[in-house]
Length: 349
Image (cartoon, rainbow, N blue to C red; front, side):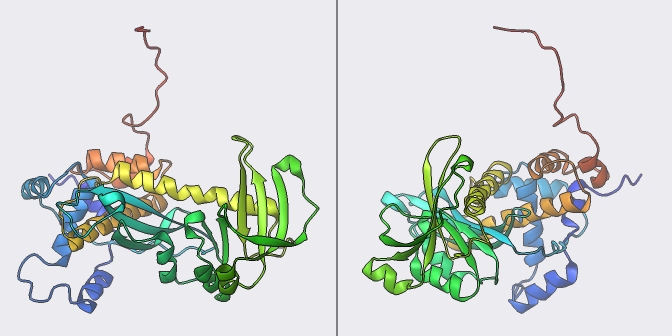
């Protein structure tokens, strides 16, 4: 009796066949390949990400017992690119096993530089490097979207790169370094300190090198974190107070930390703590597959308007990957697996 398709097959059915094959042909991925082609590799790697498998042996063993239909992905519909967050996360590794992935202090590390659209926490740019690669260097690889706002932490204070963002019509909001040399050109005295906003100035850089790299004026906003009481200083190239208030600038930077939630989600719900290979190419394939898996889960949530978070959907798919049932039912109906239950429990201590 046919009970339908596996949950895993339904999740991966969002891959568009024609687009997938077109990309394989463009980059000659199947050149001189006899059996194990790019489509097979993607299927195996996605299986490893969306199930509890932690090694290549586990993947081969499970797929050998549970082969099923073909799988393909659909594009996530493009969103309005209005607010981005840019940051990186580092995954520790063994230098003895991965000699190419040197990090700080003679330790191994692989960095994933990521730009996410904060409207849906969707990654739109990823660059994978060794641990020594400086964060600000990845800014040179970004394609700037006019009128889009890019928020970053102080590691990205590179005035040459910031000047390029400004020249290409982008807006940046980032935390200023403590040793930044500048002078105040004008001050906005219309500041409501009850909101946590402390200062709002137009400044000019006075450092010899920094002023040469960024000769234009900048806006400096100092705000107080209402919870910790810490004063934080931001800089932006949006000098018009009517277009962007000081309070809005401080609020935009707070959303920068949403990217940390993205990194936490993929580390907790996808298999990236243990790499399936040690070469640079193997590690990049592993991480890219993890990102594809995340996008598939995000697509499932969007298509079925699921009340569950992406993390909860990942848990459901992982547990039910090889069950034959309707995916829509799985991600929309209440599940005892992740539902909070109000149960009167006995006090043990």
